[in-house]
Every structure is written in structure tokens, then in C-alpha cells.
Image (cartoon, rainbow, N blue to C red; front, side, top):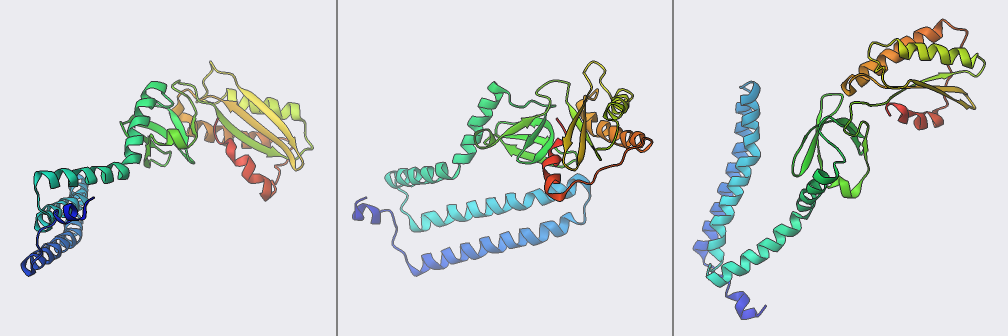
Amino acid sequence: MNPKRFMGLFRDITTETIIEAVMVVVVAILLVWLSQKLLPWLANRLHSSRRLFILALVPTIRILVLAAAILWLVPLFIELTVQNTVAILSVTGLAIGFALKDYVSSLIAGIVAAYEMPYRPGDWIEVEGNYGEVRRIGMRVVEMVTPNDTVIFVPHLKLWTGLIHNANNGGASLMCVVSFYLTPDHDAFEVRRVLEDVALSSPYLKLTQPVLVLLEEQPWGTHYRIKAYPMDPRQQFQFMSDLTARGKDSLRKMPVSFARIPPEQSMDLGADYHG
């Protein structure tokens, strides 16, 4: 840019201009500080939705105060001619576009997600170690609720950068896996039969889907896995708890012993909590 043209952007800075700018900055800082102190104080004396509404005002007021301060300060230092305004808006647009590139990427990924449907409301998905049910799909984020009733907002941007595990993929069938670890000296056929009976007698079992009991020999013992489907994906944790409790009770009545898994191998087996 031509230096003379660049200098033409700015007004003559006087002592009065500096004093006014300092006062604007001080007032803005004071208003932000007061909002961060007074609003939480007021919210703590309210209940339910009113308290949450007041707390939500804190960042909103901070943004409004900062925006008002900027709108006040810019005309103090910059000559707002048509040419200067176009130049400022161009630079500002580039800066905002660069800052919001991830946001725009998430919006585009949301359009792709609407077409490819890697997840739908009611699906149970896992993203970066977070597992939960999809409750709502927005333009920018997918809202999921974990088994601990925690709401997580996952940007659609994860479509580009990570793996998304979908346990039921739009259907009503979700495989659950329950593991048992026994020492090797036992009747494997009898244990397998008992675990099949445990699964088939569960009140949560979806009878239209198969029940599998798989076993794998390890150096420390035998790893048994019950693979079965609950009637509703939302019952998966009750179903797995039921299979675990009744499975342990049935195995304790047999001449078998539960194995102790070496710590270095326990992490590899931890991935079998659901299918």
C-alpha cells in the first residue's frame, strides 16, 4: 500500500482523542468486570432457569461491551471515508474468514453429514473416546448425551479429522459384549452352555437376533465373550449389567476359577465394553 494512502486512513491524534480513548477503554473494562461480578452474584440468589439465564448473560454482555467500545474507538483514530471503509472492511473480512475457517469447515461437514449420514438421531456413536446417544444434529455440531447424562457437542469437523464409531448405524439393533475371564482348567463346553443360558434368559434380550458365546485361549486363562442384542439400544447398560451379574452368579456355582489378568494385557481387553 502507498505510504501516503496508508497515512490517509488515520485522523490527527490529539490529547483530547487520547483521553477520550483511554476513558472508553477504562469504562469498557469496568463494565465487563462488573458484569462478571454482579451477574453471578445475582444468579446465585435465583433458582432453576432464571439462574441459568442470568449466567448466560455474562459472555453476551462482555461481547456487546467490547463491540460498543470498538465502534466508539475506530472513528476516533480512522477517517471513515468510503474508500477507507472499504479497505477496513476488506481487511476485517479476511481476518474474520481466517479466524472462522474451522467454523465454516464444520458447516460444510454438516452438509456432507446430512448426505452421507454417518450418524442420525438415536444412534450411539463414539468420537475421540466419548460414547453416547445422538440427540440432535445441527448445522455445525452434533449433540450427544453420554451414559453419565453429560451433553457433548461434537463439531461436524471431526468428519475430516477423526474416526466415528457408530454402534447401531440407524437401526434398532446394537450388539453388546460382556466378558468373563477364567483359569484354563475347566469344561469349556459346559461354561459356554451356561453363558448361553444366561443370555437367553435375560429380560432385556432381543430374541430376533443371534446370541454368540465366543472363547479365546490366552496365556493367563480363557477369555469368554457373550455377544447379544438388547431390545432397545437405550437398554444396553442394563442388559450388560444383567448379563454380568447373572453370569458371575452362574459361574460361581461351577467348578471354575476366575482368572487374574496381567496389568499389561488388561488395557487390550478394555475395548470390549460394547459392539
